[in-house]
Length: 297
Ligand SMILES: Cc1cc2nc3c(=O)[nH]c(=O)nc-3n(C[C@H](O)[C@H](O)[C@H](O)COP(=O)(O)O)c2cc1C
View 1 (cartoon, protein in one colour):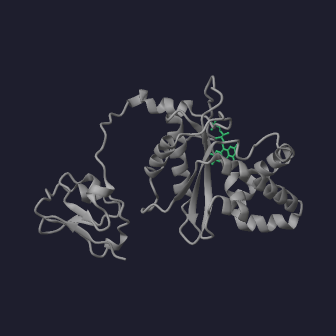
View 2 (cartoon, protein in one colour):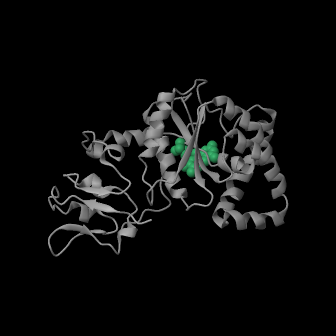
């Protein structure tokens, strides 16, 4: 479907800001000195809203967007420079896997969802779906099914032929991660998981957000990683804590009981998960890490 762009010529000040920010250079100033759009390129408009967000006179209307519904007034924000509190936020964040036995109030979960909605999509509109699991009983009930599924996976991995099929399915890099991390971890933790003496899968989290994509849609795994990161940082800003958990989605995707429990239709798959709760322990120090390499050109 073609996007339609309306330009109110009576209010347009021809400041050109829309033409500057349009990522696909659809808007332009023509020979008659009016702002218009290139009809050849209008189908490239992915309705990112940048032209409407930047226009001082609200003179542009992209079909499907409205100033009232899709935009909000910006809060006063002064960048804090080198001492911005943002840096303390990311310095003090840790992956939290030990939680207080305390539910997460819904208003905090709503704020996390609001923050996730602010995450940028590669190509608007946003295609990410989420499920907010605020009922910890569902998470607890899911654990035995996850354990069973991972037991089955370990058994299957004893057969080297299966390695080939899994590698074909998940790709070489993901397979390497499975071999290097997942398998040794499962081998080590499954006995205690089975005995019910620990929960190294859902970590006894009181709440969890699942991030999903449509099976027949585009690859939005990077959108989802960023969205989950926004959720993780928002949790920390709210005095909660959590961790992205790569170990949870494959189990849910593969097990029909889990899909039913989390109410996931067949047309969707879980790409990422974020466990959330009030941290049980306080960390005394941050962790300094280096990148594998940093090159300046
Ligand atoms: C993409 C991603 C997936 C992760 N998956 C898991 C997981 O399945 N289980 C787990 O215990 N932690 C998981 N974590 C947490 C990391 O292990 C943790 O972030 C890492 O050890 C660094 O610790 P820090 O977050 O406290 O700096 C994941 C983190 C990321 C970013």
